[in-house]
Length: 320
Image (cartoon, rainbow, N blue to C red; front, side, top):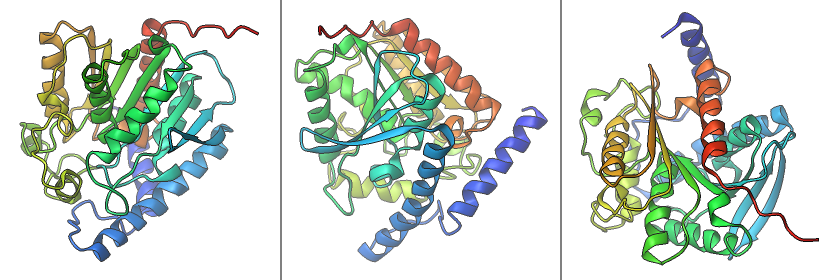
């Protein structure tokens, strides 16, 4: 990795740690009090990041309710494309309520010039576990496609959001709904069980997640709530990838979820789906947006914008 990028990443990491000084990735909350403390600390850091991004980029934020689910519409200062992007935030199914889940979507809107619709789905411990998140996402999607041409919509998210992006396509097929035009699944949590080589090889090499044996193992148990980890609606790598829309996958050489992403790529290629996969040198989990002011983030968002342009159908014009 180039020295300039190393310095930028370390600076961004230091700022992030300052914002979330008490956030411990190796914490494994068990009691309601421990979960409240853990999620509150995360919320404080993430909401500060979201507010800073809104100010930095001059993004217009509109609160909505769609199909009874809280949502946000992010409109960048410079709208360069007509298409709508449908965003599902990450956070291990337990972190990122409200605008605390917004940073990835805000950055995508600002850097690529697309309007972004973000879904604020229900999460434990404050709300319901599986399948509430999936139900909320699909309720919003079904309402959106009443007004938007599905092939003109791009769906994206990272980590949990990457898994939910993959699940959305599987749910569309199960429910016989039209699929979106394209997907970007960033470092998807495609298997919430500890299966895959990088759970071992990148243990304590990933500077973001650190280890499966920290908070994400506790989050997996809390969210699944007794459901088998190999259920495709929880771990989409076990689902059906036939007839998927074009899909971009993103990961990094130090990403704890590198194997999760590689296993999805294999399934997509076996199904004959048009697929591309970015493996970013030296990148930990979600580094391509968590460390926003870096060449790594520049490169990723350039590739994302190109992918959307190449694969999304034009948004139909509304007759006046």
